[in-house]
Amino acid sequence: MQNNHIIGQHCLLDVYQLDSKWLQNSSAIEQLLRQLAQAAQAHILESYFHTFGGSGGVTGVLLLAESHISIHTWPEHQYAAIDIFMCGKLLAEAAVTELKQLLPDAQMHIRWLARTYQPQA
Image (cartoon, rainbow, N blue to C red):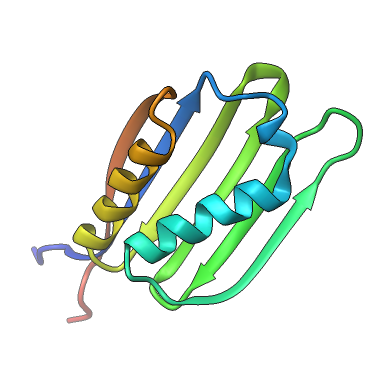
């Protein structure tokens, strides 16, 4: 039986108690994700952010050379789901540390997944 090899780290964050108006502001949210990418020393290839009408939230993604950072917001619940997937745990951990500093009043539930593959025989 072969061992799995870790190819990257995937951090799933449930972020609570956020300002509802902020969760509707795609420019502010994009700036936040760019700061996370910078903290992780990641290289942004593309970005896309969509604001849903009315009191809807924002969905956005930064496509990185190292993988991606994405967000989905629900202003009506003061909640955001953030994914940070990078090749290398230290880079992802730096982004999470930066997020905690940028959103000090938020409550966060953080889960880590090792993304793995099995080498071909």
